[in-house]
Length: 207
Image (cartoon, rainbow, N blue to C red; front, side, top):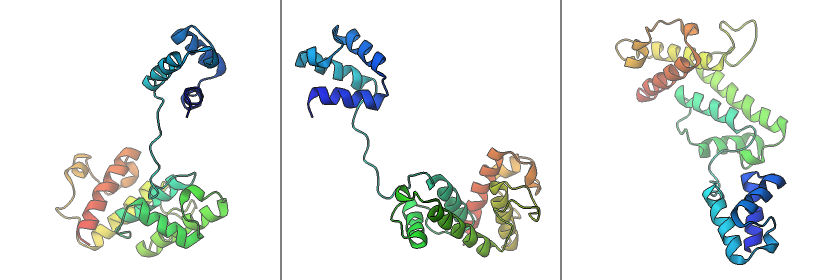
């Protein structure tokens, strides 16, 4: 790649508008056009732009979930892991599940809302069947608690922990320090996440 082309790539990567870009060139070399610069001046511009963040972007890992619908699928997948349903929490395992449901090889190619909904609802359905909680992730008057998915997960975990005899004497210090009660509706979002992770460790350790 020529130095001129590299500078234009840097302009785009750093999000410089034309006025800011030309002002920057002028401040570095006294010239506002790369075509008027010597090669040494262009290299000086590139050195400055590299110091401001321009550079090769890291290669995208094929086994890492990306795309519009990835965050929702990842949160559900981790929920299933914290419930002891999923044995492999890696994105690669989730991507394999998505492909089975949609035929799409990777979440970055998951652009159709119908395909995404099919994968999301399949994962929700799997969690509901395994936990026996038909109300999980549903926003309806029939749900016994507010429609916060974190709360739904914690309540399901608590039921599993009680059924397996894991509650007495085995709760983490973090849960105890919260002034723990079994009314999880009183917990903040951050506390729910902390409890979810701690109960997940407890459930997986007993599996």
